[in-house]
Image (cartoon, rainbow, N blue to C red):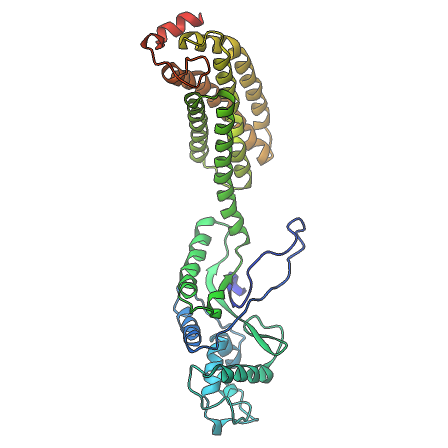
Length: 401
């Protein structure tokens, strides 16, 4: 819109669905309509109420431009349905085929007619409403308008209303979210309180929300992918270890790693964009690596009756492998961190941070859990809580050395 203000479109009678080819960005799908009926008195009254309250909203901007004449400005400042209401209330003896064109009110008296005038609003019965809508369409039919009544084969199928808001477009999430929520909070009550079977319930709105929608989906997908990753990790651990205690100890360690990574990235000023969403999605996968190796080694210890022995075996078996794996990945991240491309730079920082805390938490936090909660039975499924199997830091040091 001129001046940078966003246009907002409100539509009634449209079937809101994405029916295009999701693998073809140039396929926008086809426009679909739903059964649209506002011929009852309640729906007509609610629609007029919607138009009147729309002008009172905080996002409603100046509709007229300096180049607009009185008629154009007047048409932009009212809803099409308000024009219909005023058109049917015009006294029949004032209608003419030769009206003046100085204002919107002059258009209401055209054409000379003996029907669809001197009527009370809401227009009843439904047959009169439908007849007058058709007559209005025949009188003022045109193409290329964003607002107005839409007909197909003579049937009234949709109503659209376009306004100019007072909000200028921005890529920033918070202002766009406030703008979106202000419109949504205005629209939702009309949908919720629409009479049964009324076309008011088909109300929908749109504006330039493409990037805002992308941001919302990035946040939702980041959280959902992390949740799925945690779920898959706990299922795999349960199947592999057949021990609830061992699986819980491992998953708590993994969650601690991921949460610390998230806190560090937020503190570093990273915003949740596409790159960061990808990083969050794979964070669980990288954080799980060392923890699973140690957990598996604990499970395979020949001496399954002693926690000290199992933790010592865990360190002796996987300590070198985990340490060298962390070191090589850390070095790879350092190499990437010198890149000038943002994605490579951020991914390098991610690898460095992930390897550091994965190694620290899996090497020190996980064994701490296993010292207290680690299973000591043959299968690992039923834990023997004998006090003699409690592992102290001194015992751990002696057994490791």
